[in-house]
Every structure is written in C-alpha cells, then in structure tokens.
Image (tube, rainbow, N blue to C red; front, top):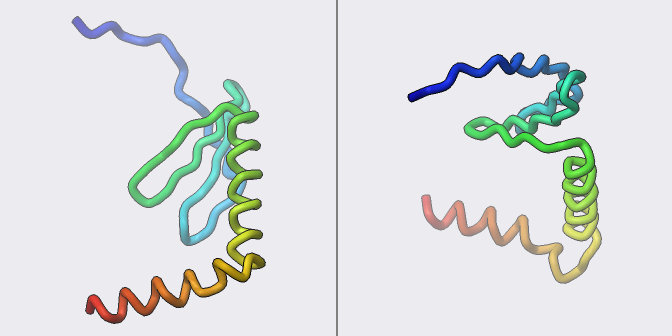
Length: 83
C-alpha cells in the first residue's frame, strides 16, 4: 500500500549554473541540490560545504601538481585514438 505524503516539495532557488549543471537550495528545508545532466544529488548544507571544499582542493591539485599536469592531455589523446 502506498501512503500519501503530506510533505511540501522543496522550493528551489538557483545558486549557480554552468554548462555542467546547476546548484539550487531550498530555503525551507536547507537542502542543496546539485543537478547534472542525468543526475540530481541532495545534500544538507554542511555536507555540501565539505564536498565543495574537496572539489576545490582537487581542482587546485590538478592545476598545480606536476605529476598531474599531463592528465588532461593524456585523456584527450586516448579519446582521439578511440575515434
């Protein structure tokens, strides 16, 4: 038996967007929604802050770590070879 929920759906306010997706937040429940082309992830605000910090650290390392400098070029070359 399916029970009907009286929960009010989230009101989504746009926080940021790009060609990769968008981020919205519900001012009522505080959940942050990360929407990508085929996927939406919901986080409480603290977990979202931790995720954003981790992604910033990863981006910085990809841009500054000499051992990782060739990663984008190598990936692009593999794509060219496959096609």
